[in-house]
Image 1 (cartoon, rainbow, N blue to C red):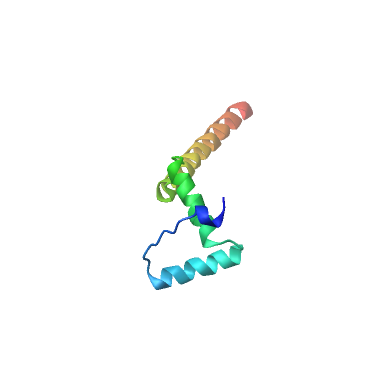
Image 2 (image 1 turned 120 degrees about the vertical axis):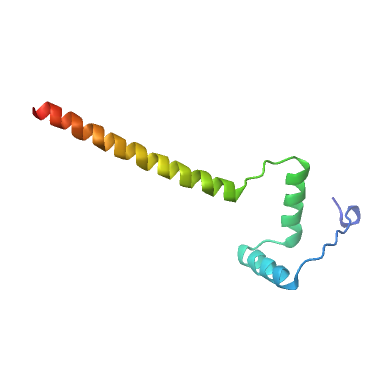
Length: 86
């Protein structure tokens, strides 16, 4: 695609947000155009979005359930060891 085949998109954002965005891009060696094009491609192609808050909640719940299972297993192991000693 040549430069003539391109068009511009303008968005309005908070100057502080733009500054933080630009700093992060610079640290990662990326360009705004590349990132925005990736976002647009993902949106067009219907890329599945990950809800980080929901995912975090799921991880917390799974950790709690795992702790209950580990406790239950430890209790059963203790019972079995007690039976075998008797």
